[in-house]
Length: 636
Image 1 (tube, rainbow, N blue to C red):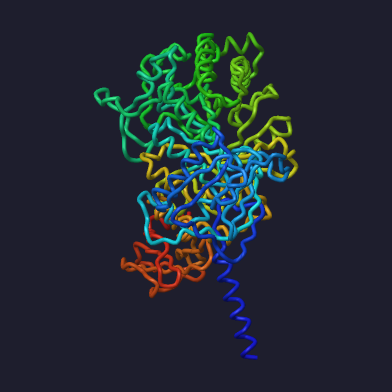
Image 2: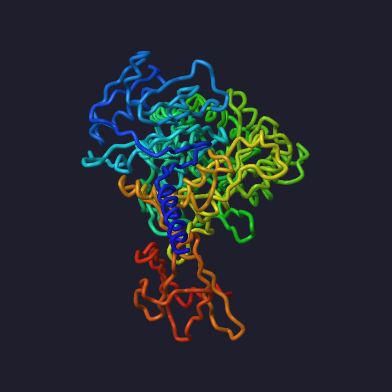
């Protein structure tokens, strides 16, 4: 009996070891088999592939990694036929398309002969390269040359293609400006996880970021505000003598350069010009676009409060809307959309349409007169009228319009307009049932600017979206025609993003989860398996010195009172295998301190509870300080 148990235990150990050795690919491929063994890249290697302009950047990036970081000497053979069999890495475009791979899929085979990546299209080879880079040791992520590493590719047979064609990330550069080089870096980090659309939020109340030659003041004045640090939306009102020098914009040449940079990496870039709300930067630049006489005194917002959300909808303290009853607005939009459409070859322009306060509209004589003339019942129908006029403008430029789900309100949305659903899934469901194409971006799953752990330790935002919430994202809700759901995206608003390092912290690891929801088939997704792969990629990020959040290791905290009125703290973990330890005496708990199991009753004289998680003898999360005042608030 003991021998049987030992044999069974050994089998389990070997199985676990083999599982642990499986490559940690994100997103999970469609089909993958990993035989035992690995192919070692010699000091000098040959790479063979088709000479194709679309792959020039991809080939150069792979070559740079192998030569500069791994120290390999690389020779390329282009279109050399049978000679290519000598190559360590081989790329091949199918002469007859493999239907199972589609446009973006690839097959990667690694064996004793080397690595071969096959695809129908150049983009498929590009994604095969991203997978190959993940298969190689994590040291490849270093910015400096690495020695003493065996550069091995594990044996693999991978056949992979995406579930959705639209795999997007939204970057808001209006609330805080990011430079041209930082936007390029963002694109590089996107494509490593097979994202293919950059939704670029270029205008808002805090800044207009794209040069429009017809309206130079948009960037002369509209691109700059007062530099503030602290908590965005709670800043003090700027004083007249404070310099308005913080911000920036992209010239049209910058835009063309970034668009080309994206194209070279198979990324489409969709610009967003957010109207009719979120337009203070435009109004501060050209007050005649407003219905409100006081607009001549408006300035670009610097993060001070100017919208009242206490009613459950936006009430403007200053009118940040373009005037839908003013013909100058449509002339302005015609010229703006004309210049924008010439800069961005992608088929869509996003017009925003979200969070438009209507309290000024409800009492404005011009708008009330327009309502009477056109038979519009309310301000929602006024916005719908504006949206229809803008759709004609965008269509006249050879583009299709997209907007946030508020554009459904008021009715009459043209069928050709696509809808991006952010207030949960309901807007997307409604739009799809009406025949519109839909991009699913529900804030409770994919808003990666929101807190990802407990509010006691995370930079404060109004809501929490944990890694598990992002991994639970399912873009196609029940009862909806899947053909109308083009895909989804991770949205990164920048109110609280003061620098690029914090941008990375908010993006990872949640964008890993969303990448997998958009690329991988549901049957291939498994939470526990995913966490193991996330940890492997965190190790890669450590080598690359990229920032990420450790929030998944930190406890989920709930506070309530028992029948005796005592405070009780309920602690649980998002991932398995962790223990939670705590103290009430201001000392710093470690693995030898009491372990939280079930509810912990707070001593009546306690002022703070310190909490930390461990895996074995290693601290995994940050120490959280939960004050007694915070507990009392949570218990209410």
